[in-house]
Length: 50
Image 1: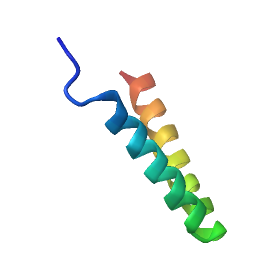
Image 2: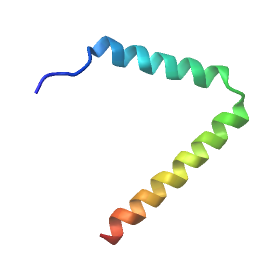
Image 3: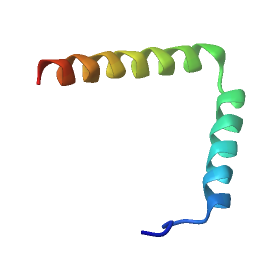
Image 4: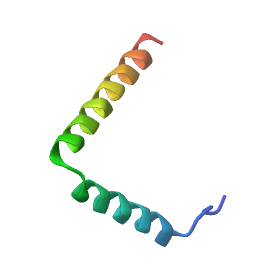
C-alpha cells in the first residue's frame, strides 16, 4: 500500500507543531506534556491488563 500523503506534508506538519511549541508559554507546554504522560501511563496500564 502506498503513502496516502507526500512525505513533505508530514515534515511540514512536524515543523508547524514545533513552531507552535516554541510560541506557547512554558507553563502550557508543561501542562500539555503532563496530560500526555498521564494518557501514556493509562494506556500502558490498560494494555498490561489485557
